[in-house]
Length: 546
Ligand SMILES: [Zn+2]
Ligand SMILES: [Zn+2]
Image (cartoon, rainbow, N blue to C red; front, top):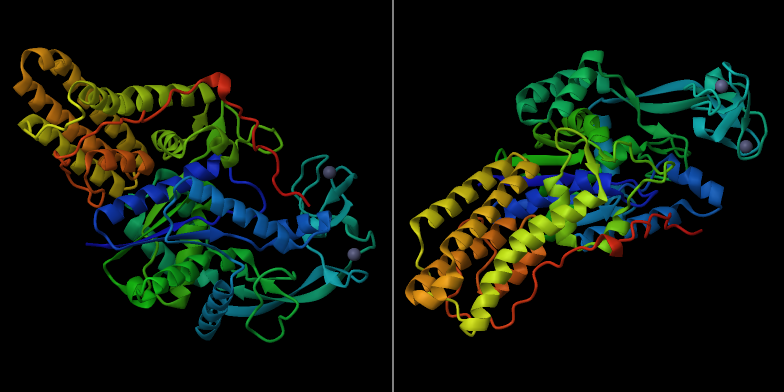
């Protein structure tokens, strides 16, 4: 049995989560639930990425503490994930003391192995504010159109800029001219990690999705370049080295180390030795994220892990997703077509949301979110398929037979169908093919409903009671296994059905219901959605109020 480590990407704590985040992160929870059920030792971790310039820029603008913004979104993310039944072993954030200490420990280890060096360059400095100012903190004259532009881009002519291209630069905060001043940064020798990263790429890439393969190959071909690991900021993890007191660790290296800090914290809490688990040849790691995050997991992370210790478990399964669009349009805050997780949760049930985003997961190409499509899938697959199968069987038993479950007389064909489904779904999930597994499971639901329709138990109840009991017992058997197979995707309904029928949800293998049970009250498994009652404008507003 393999040990499974699953790292879900760390959302940036500066805005609410939207459906793109959900689609990219949900596969992590399906995998975690599947592997636990399969009996594998599993650690599934993530957290909020709380440091970095976008948060400080916003905090300065609003006149609040960067920590207030990061804490607000961190709490919101935690609640969103809990409401969506994500089963993280640990969801933490990068502001914890444990993360801080872990980052410092590994930075010292990387330094002792000779992977860092100092480099001094001229940078923009504001003497009035007494600090170095980043590209987003300065403005000046655009060399192309002559308008006032920011240090990274001119909003008038849309040219991408670097601060040295601007004329008459001033500090945005105080309006005073900036001067160039020597600044010393620490750099990571990423260029020396190309062999290690390239070897891993060749070893594991056949299991990755096309975009992950292409992006990684492109980076490796261009050649890896050294990267600064320090920034002139006062928000973030401090450097554990002398001479860098006015700087903080750059988020790209610090947030990626979150997998190590969260992993160690989660394992220690359960009495598992982190070093042993992450050095075990039997451990397989899955990293789950959107396509804009691929190179952090296929290049940066393995490079850092290699610089720390080449014998650590390296990223093996890269579960990267494409984007979710709105109609044919890219989703963005400025277009006002962004659907947040808050909006979804205000309108829909967690199982329904999870089902939709598994069935429409943008695994290999962009998907498109459409409300009519959502309503139609919910009503057809969940109300008309899964829900109807459960409700029509159990309601009939409750009405005509006091809810007494019949003894199981398992049909060889039904037995074979159930066994085949477990095998296929297990294989698909291990490969991270959530969309295909969800599609295949709906075939199983249709098989069950067809079995019911073909055998007409409502007729047999009047003509042949023995045959009625046999057919119904096969339907209840199909139902119990439907709930068990669906549990990684829809955990709430699985619990409801397992309690009604008296079976355990603790294995990914055929289950048998408890025939001594009586099902008197049958709850409606899913309710039909009415488009009139859905308000997609709920919760689209920014939730941080200064
Ligand atoms: Zn200034
Ligand atoms: Zn311009």
